[in-house]
Image (cartoon, rainbow, N blue to C red; front, side, top):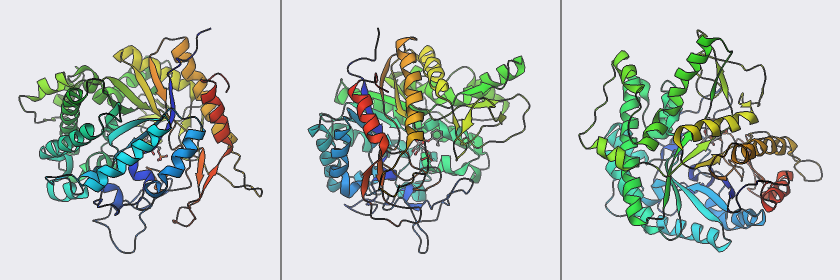
Length: 476
Ligand code: P53
């Protein structure tokens, strides 16, 4: 009987701005995540003009991983984690983004953090940019619209790649770069790039320009990174939300193929090193002109990624001619509810088989290793009178997804590096800024308004996941 490989990287995922807090500690600068207020399902987070009096900013303190990482890592080690995916806050290293010299105190923080992980044999998996660029670069340079930001990002990246070259092997450049294809929804452009596309006279063109800069920056970092340490594995990261055809009507089928171009586009460039054929006619049709420098073509070709990191939470179904706008959270243009699956309280459709489908799609397309770096179930957890948290719904979700993931590896032959469910320690929700949308095996005592002791508690899923890791995914 075939099983998952022995060195399969079981772990969990978090991101600096959603877990660390300490937003103004250790010389850290203000990041774009620090000017986001809290929203709710259906209520957008506000983007304020700097940090203003009278607003609550949930990421400022978050789960205080900055202060409690030792305690947290001890718990992760108890679960048997083999890796932890987290990100570096750019603003701890270059507080404003355009300084000459990095902030040593910030560098020390990650030295200590990665050192603590390695002490327990936990491999750090690190994203360079997960929704938290310096606010200064947004205000003074216009964010990623400005080509100069490529240089700032590359400088920051090479600083940390060099500093941690013996501590970290697995890297990713940008988190979910493809969220921005949904250029009408301000949160995505702002968090990925510090740009609100709707403020531009040609929002869609602006989005492509911004992403072109990011793709070039990513390729430069991959190429230079391999010089720093040839053993580095540097990946991209894409939000993988497969768009099913609503029916076998050929029109629906073809519409889903077209819609999937939106999902694949940036991954195609990261992996293959050039823009896919379908982009040129689209740009022509929409009168989109992206400025590229003569050297960009070579840079993209020379900086292709070693693996594809993906987040998988849900699928959506699209119907030709359907009018829904969709915002990329609970739907895409033309998306309609899928009658065969249920959705979470936040409208995210739960579809474990979709994970196997996604892994097949991506592996057939790219033929390089995949890494599931996010998956999970955001839900409200209740503390029982005896203090326990019985999150059976979460266990059920993860179990069903792991079963399908195993099929992809064992029956379909997909080369998969590991599995890191999202928010293994409760943290601030990205899309809504809420605390109550929880994903963790470890509960953090804090509510949506910021009240709570920050005390950690093991949920029922804690011992369940420990057993899963111990048995290498056999005992679900
Ligand atoms: P929250 C959409 C589809 C798949 C992944 O989200 C997504 C999104 C939203 O862009 O984003 C990832 O906390 C993101 C994480 C985030 C996680 O989804 O809103 O990389 O930062 O926390 C879960 O429930």
